[in-house]
Length: 324
Ligand code: GZL
Image (cartoon, rainbow, N blue to C red; front, side):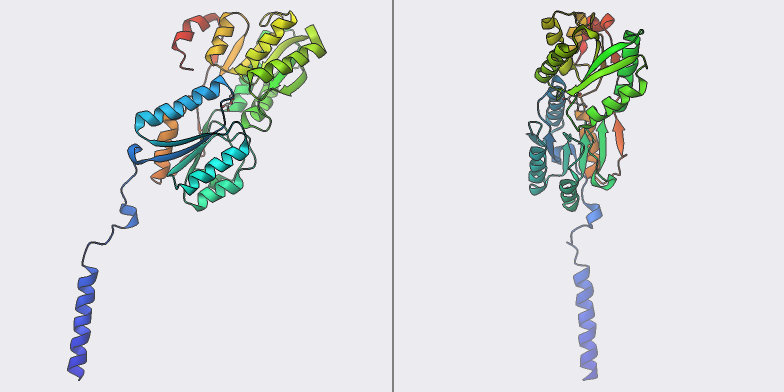
């Protein structure tokens, strides 16, 4: 009996070893093939189509996906946070590889980004930043809006060396660019320049014009300067200033941000004095970061974009080469 038991034990051990060595098991998880652009599936929750800048930003995200062979699922939230959150949830349900989004405002994102984290989907904030814990996003790709505001303040000082009263068109209330351009501008503005009114035009031409009409009704030719958080609101304000009977760029000095083609055309016409660049062409950097995140690379907290300042004197020469 003892010999039989011993034989059974030896045979069991033999089959167990053969079974383990039978090959054919899946490679260990960390041997899984790396993603490539051609296999990458991206969900992108865009803010809307509120400005020339946004149109150029969307074109960059879509055209770059096409060029790289990335499968892009894209949504336009019409500047409504609830639509962006719903889009992110739909991408989680579809189990995309990575989610990109430009948060319309800074707050209200923690719950949905936690859901993405729990689903193991990396999130990249593009253009605007959300106020969330570091562990809820892979990286933030976007401009230094405070620096853009600081540059605008310095330019206003140069345009109004003797000081005076100015008004301000603020971007979308609660958005990172509006908050930071507001504070950056005040960091550098000279003491002899007084901001007598500041209202939001929500980054659109129509609302920029509407608010400027109200400013002109209330203050008239007391106003010697306008700081607009984006070119679209500045272009709307230029129409209001002309309809009021004053000369934009002459009676009222205008400093704006974005550097879209419409701003170059306004500078060529002598109606805008300065535009501070905010680069919307973020597609190539975004997909590079997306692939690195999906393949497990730890990314820096912030990848800033390079930007410049543009003036009327060479606007006509530069306009043909402007990509947005
Ligand atoms: C800035 C971007 C802003 C632009 C506006 O990065 O979020 O939103 O300045 C756009 O033109 O609407």
